[in-house]
Length: 74
Image (cartoon, rainbow, N blue to C red):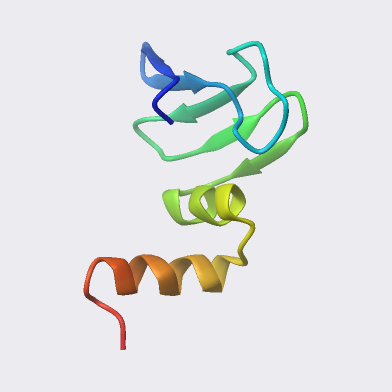
């Protein structure tokens, strides 16, 4: 999310899945990978769930796409 910025150990950005105009409610913890949109209560525990959320995929579909992208797919 190129429109974001680092504040402490978090990446704070606009949520690209909705008409978000104010940075601050969508955050990703850079140490743990936890992420949340506190305006909508959408949240996840890792980068795969974030990828799934941003791309409208299931967790399995997201994992498969990422494995294929990095040359580790079946």
